[in-house]
Image (cartoon, rainbow, N blue to C red; front, side):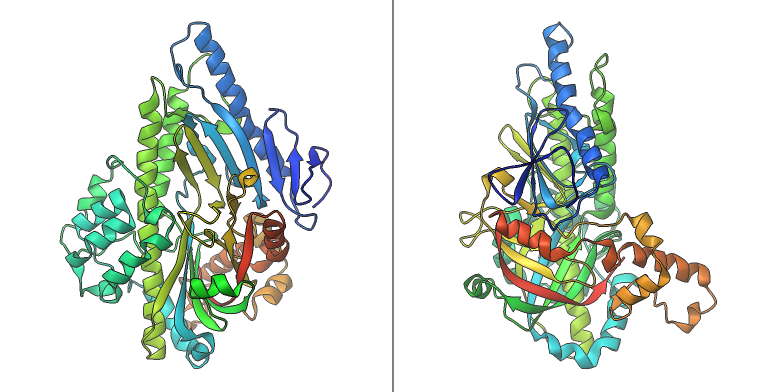
Length: 509
């Protein structure tokens, strides 16, 4: 883990207290085998300065400044760091922050409702062995070469943005029997709603300026340019083999059996989330009270109570629109993978949803806004799931992923990590020695927008080098070892292991 003078042990061996200049309750859940970088903590301390900024606003109000929070008690209460904690673009990934009567758009960033969707099929993974060349060709064609074939009527687009997966189910008949909808089982999708967090939708009061997007297809069967996008960065669609079971009872209940072929989807709201995040980060900066020192790092709060409450509520509406789109996007990515498998193997494939778990969201619970950046809900047995909420923790293109069951750990804000976490920044990973890159990726099946072995690209070193840099950014050596990360989650009592899945082929944008 490294030695940092601000980390203090607690009574829990898998939990450390993080002393910080803001004097807030900050806890890091990790065992000594998980590495961390000082830059991530420095970025965290900048984020915590929002507590000082809020206190300064409240003091200014008491001196007669125009009301911002008014009588609403606002503040940053607690912060939890998950074991994949690492430096992010604006806020550390693996940061969970509980705030009162305010939300902080920059605390979750632009990748709104990035999340994981896991399906298990009725096909044994070994059945794909004779079909890998054909399957990789079909995956590339469907995901990147214009064969997505997802018609969406304006009514369907609006239903998705307002209501997420329930809206998609409700309007499925608009394009029944056309394109990807031929593989959409409305009854199964309706039954699957309880296998998605919050049934795959967040409440919204309207639309965040997406009217043009809704109408842009024009025709009922207009093809949608956004939905079905994997996205870039660490997003992926991966075919996996269920390698081991640790909790047979939970695995059986969730339909997970050893040796089966699984499909794991990691994607979000693509361009829609960026539109929402960018606008509201600017809006939060614009309305922050003049005469008060701005919070470090640009972490400006938006009230959800008091005289400026509509500012924060408007953000939550826009965030909800993007989140609802992300749930639908992951559903279609799963259908696209099933289509590729069927067409390459010549077999009919049934896929059952295990769970759809979102990240990068503000979860409002009354006056509390729980920000999860690169962290996933891990509620215990109860209304969401009688075995505990499924938690999905991917490794890397060359490492196993894990399925766990949440325990509802209050000290961890009922949150778990959303992956292994980066060990190297994208820039450093792309500068790794060629022999290191080759050693870590030679045996991997990676499907991207281009086929680097195509004779048509033999003379295009510019294209090949750009593609290789993007793969290098996401190579296995760029990520932490997933095993200590998962062991930390289990040792802390946040979630227990149910199954381990091994990557067979990864689709990367």
